[in-house]
Picture 1 (tube, helix red, strand yellow):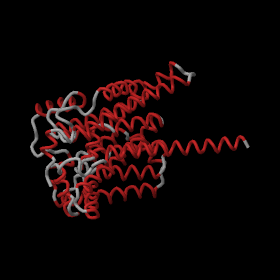
Picture 2 (spheres, helix red, strand yellow):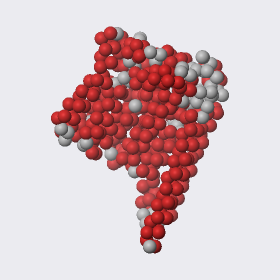
Picture 3 (cartoon, one colour):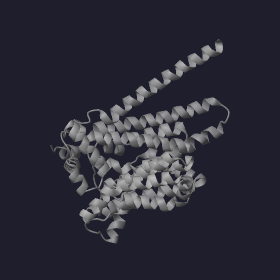
Picture 4 (cartoon, one colour):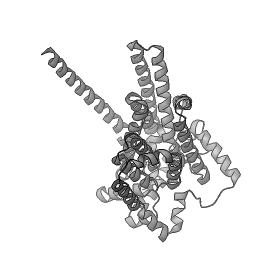
Length: 395
């Protein structure tokens, strides 16, 4: 009886803990992404107005397929809720939450639940990510490769057909990103051996199903390419006017500095020329890179390739928004840094549980300060900056 009573009490305690954590997460999500979503600025920005026009009809989407998945969702949102600011921006918020879920699953598979939880909070409260999520523009979809990476590692671990189908669908959708086709090709080349091995464990029907699904997803892209070949230029990162090699190199150098020092010019997702990341994230990313170099160099090389691709895409097109492609890779390096420092701390005190809880308290405090910073930056400082007040005034 005592045993069953203990289990019953433990079950209630677990349920209470889950309810409390779910309530806190819901409060945080509402505060970061939904609080005054439609009224934080006095109007829309130029990118948001262009996005609303580009998603006003399915024909518009078919003629210009760049960011097509985001445009289709925006079209549906406007049809159901009207062309309001809240409806337009809610699409990006829902996609951001979806990407965070997949990011958590990926980091949990790499480094465990605890690090996955804290690393996801660090990404969720990064000001650049918050402002991407709260924008009515389609740039939040630049984070879609997170789903591809999560699906890929799911397939490698499980070798099951649902993972194969998830990889096919996510890869097909990423093809609608600027540079998405090139990014998928780069990833396929890097992971060709693992993909071949995983595909070998699938049946013919599932391979056929994946092929048909991919062709169906890409069919609008083929239609747009035949109807208007120039519409595919941005998908291949071909700028309207090619800059000189010197300008590309100079822009690339500035884009690297934009990650941790300052940007070459103000952007929509920053205040002034502040960098994408700040001290704590930079230090954790350096520790994470060191740990990956020692223990998982293939993962480090993959992250470096993604970062290099994002920097080059931003440099060639002179568009800071393309640096968003770098965000997941740096966030994964930050997660690796958290894991490395946590395990090093545990190695010093392998049997004493108190240092473990102290480490968790320190990590939670660090993440809490980061969340507070992200809230103040995105919800107080950014909307009251002179650039935002003068830009987000369109109706």
